Length: 194
Image (cartoon, rainbow, N blue to C red; front, side, top):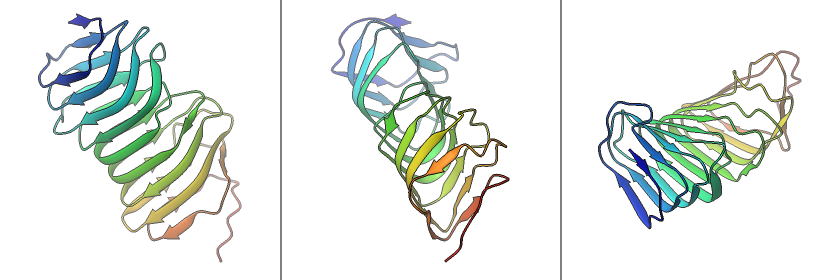
């Protein structure tokens, strides 16, 4: 199904297993709720996504925010499913599932990671302002960016950050605040413990 138009709220409850099962083009979507489905939902060509995205109880759904879409202050909350973004998002509250960042530039202001896996793979000088890892896995092993910045990191027991990609390409603007958890540093990184 391909949809075009202005949607105050788009609720996706069921889709086929196709890729794409649902395609938004030339649309405006302030609120997108995904609570079920089996296939891929593409937010694509000239579609503006603003406001909130919710993926709750959508274990088999996959959302892809394509590079041709326009993103304005998007806040994502999810507990299941898979979300792939080629654009920056403003905030992510993650309680489960898998998120993969593939954006080149832009700033993500906040990630609160409780459970699940974030595959952080920016391709350029993207910025993450705050990462709070209460649990879950923040995985930078596949990050091809020459250099990207994470301004502030706070970790707690049950969380893991793995930056080992051989490029030593993460710039931390401030010290990592470790209250538990595991961090696996890239080769050549200088670490000071105080």
